[in-house]
Length: 492
Length: 135
Image 1: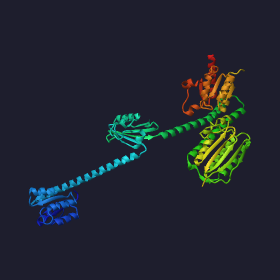
Image 2: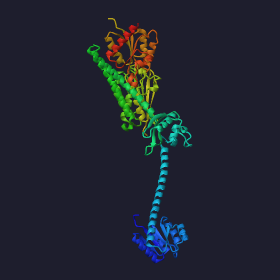
Image 3: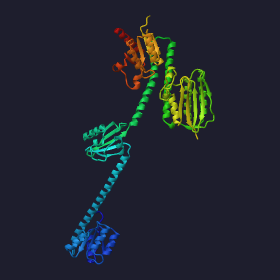
Image 4: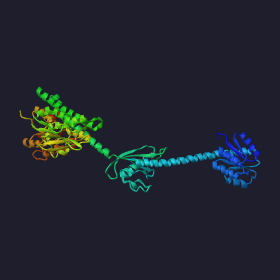
């Protein structure tokens, strides 16, 4: 003990009190004295003591009562009884009441000092034990809390979690795992995995991971079908080891990657389509240039110039395609790029029509603007609207017949502003109609008639309309014409 | 000078029709063209070409295959060699090879687009030679 032992001597005989004080003060202890039980108790209430020497026979509160009363304050205070009747009975009685030991009167200073020293050591041990006990209690509490916290955390996870022990028994799992694997019989603990899991690949993986050499760290990552065979699960499995690297069990984490797989598939389909669409014009350009460079064909300059301009046309269509792809990317990148302002779509329509007048004139196509110039404003991105009308009006010209016409009308109901672009062109067949908004889709008759296009114009139009929370509709009759209707929510 | 042979080109890309026509005509072949499988079959029946150069991917993705099947199962035309040209290989991520797919594709040879003029001429020449030997 670093601090000197704090000792209280309670005795009605002044000689004993003083004697004790002298002996013990010499040993370096801090001594207080009390001449009877009441004063002794008061002292004990005022400040803490490590050891109390108490006379059994005192007026007022007797020694035995005092032992109990002081122990109520601190049960670990060492009580040493000083007694004139050094009999077995009194000693037993005192020990029963909680005394540590007794000192028969008269006693030698050595006997006192030895007993006090021993008592104080005992006190120290008791305090130490008490501290250890409290620590353990605390640790157990924390552990219990940790365990239930862990269960709550695992329970909340969207990913499935399974923990198996060294015997391969299922010891911990969560609701997501039950759902994904259709686990059964989870109310019967301590059975082998095959009791709960029907998924054979997963059981095999579990066996494999438990078989792995103890000193090697292994990890299994594989895809398995879910319990109902409807989705794909990504399984990550790893052994759980203790500090010495001994195998304790295995932890398995399951993630539903069905959606990811679908997105991945759509992505590769799109990439494959884009690659094919890019390759066709590139192959033609390469073909023309190869032909010119090979010298296989001796032709006049005029012919060569013609071939070069054919290559240039394909290069232009390639450029238009890349432009459209960038456009799609921009729309799909989201609203960041969009600047939504209240716009009058009729004005934008008018400007777009103006722009296309020369091209329409070349095919002798007349454009009629009908509809209201005072439509309610629409919240839209001006550039997107320009692109949208450009795509639809240029289609209406491209797929129109010589001397045909284009009529543009507007409509209005309580929620939507409608724009209707009607042409007198080749129309779209019933078979093709459902697919015209698909990426790279081009109607059979348009390909036959050698009308140029990337197959992305309507894809872009639809994406723009979608991103403005509107919708696009098309009606068409082959060889009569098509009507594209756009509905955009009005600003109220 | 008598033509070295009658060749039918079937391709929905007008650029390839024209460039292959230029190369082959320059080397003394008589060339006719068709822009669709249907038109191609018509020309086969009308003109009885010595060899067909066919693009795999036409209006429908399997048009080239069904064209081949029609020709190769017809006793009148099945001896006409078909040279398949295509840009399908890289685009779809797998590669056709004559050795592996030749049986059910029923073509006689196989080239990737664009075909360099000398390769086109060599292959056409080789196929016509082979046909002559078989007769």
